[in-house]
Amino acid sequence: MTAPTCDLAVLQLYGFCPSVDNNGSEVGVGGEQTTPGTDPVFNPDDDSGEESESSPPPKELDFETCLRSWSFIECFRSAEEAEEAPAEENVAPGVRPITITDLAQFAPTPATLTGEPDNVGIAGMPTNFVTTASITTQSGTLFGRSLSVRFTPIAYDFQYGDNSSTTTTTGGASWADLGQAQFTPTPTSHVYQDRGTYPADVDVRYTAEIDFGTGWFPVSGELTTDGPVQQIRIFEAHTALVAHTCTEKPDSPGC
Image (cartoon, rainbow, N blue to C red; front, side, top):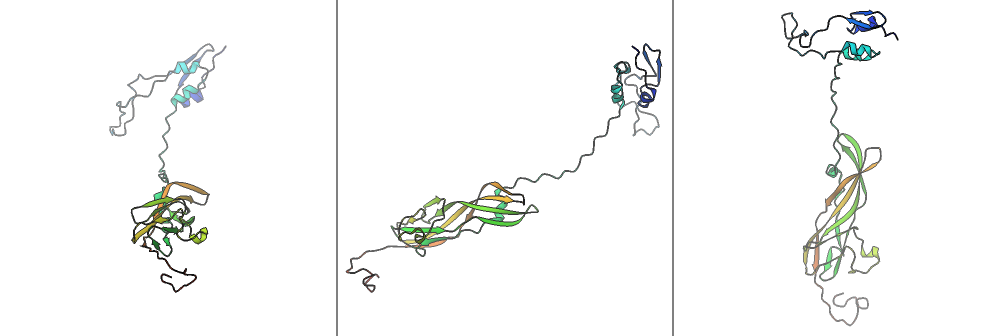
C-alpha cells in the first residue's frame, strides 16, 4: 500500500512540512526542529530588537508520529494557536429570594378587637370577643417590579389583658350571628375573675402569596399584624329577689 503524500499546501500553511521527499514507500519530512529550551520567544518588554529566550518553549510536536497516522488532524491541531478566552461578561447578580419580611410594607391593616356587649363584661361570666380579618390583596412595587400580594389569615392570638391569652383559627362571631344568648361561652370568649379595666388586643397571623403577572406563588413564613389595644371594663353583678321580672314591671329596681 502506498503511504499518503504530504500535502505541502496544507502542511506548510501550519508550518509542519517545509520540504517533503516521497518515493512511494515512505514519507520523509525535512526542515529544522529546534531543541526544547532554545526556541527564541519574542519578549514585548525587551526593546533591544532581539528575541528573548526566557519564556518556556511550546510543547514539542512529534511530526513522524502524526504523519504515520494517515490523518493529519492531530498535526493541524497541535499547530493551532490557542484561542483567546472570551472576555468575561458583566452578569448582573441574581435577585435574592423574596422573604416574608420584604412583604411587610404590604401588610393588611391591623384588626380591631370588640368585646360583647359594648366592650363591657361581668366578672365570672363570659365576655365574647370578635375581630374581623379576611383575605386581602395589595398591589405595589418591589425591587423595581410591579406585583400583587395576597394575605390569608390563618390564626388569631387573643391577649385579654389579665395575663391570659388564647389562639384560635377564627376571628369569632357575635352572639346574635351564632344564634346564642348573651354570656354564652364561645370559641373566642373569656371569663374575667375580677372587676376592673383590661387592655385587650388581638394579633392576626397571615400567610402570603405574590404575583408578578405570571400566577400566584407562596412565600415561606407568616406575617403578624399587632392590633390596637381595646379597653374592656368588667363589673361585678349582684342578684336580688324581686316580685316581678323586668318584662312584667320595667320600673322595678334593677330594670
